[in-house]
Image (cartoon, rainbow, N blue to C red; front, side, top):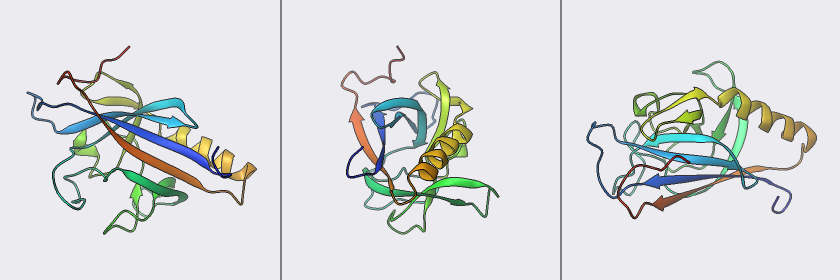
Length: 157
């Protein structure tokens, strides 16, 4: 815990080559307080200055996280604040970049190309419990790009 905050981190694993199946996603790891929690999937990182809805991932950086009701999904979900040009970006379940629309997807399993076994409910429950126990403290997420030097998919160990 840093400065009385709960720290989340996403490490995106970005290959130096394009995948043959045509999907343009990035697989990553989500950590809570430096402990692995689940896998993530996001839209492709592209050389654009700003995030484009449904096409690009969130820019690497640090964002405040709140838990609030999603009008679209009709449930309480994590939302990243202060993403340029967006009111907020949700963290939710899904399997491929077609499910993402630029949001980080979370799941417990991956083959390096897609994810499955949604971790959204467990992540939300974990964050809600922490927030209940620490009502005056904030939740933050740092997103980092980790470039793969060998040019392949993330190695699952």
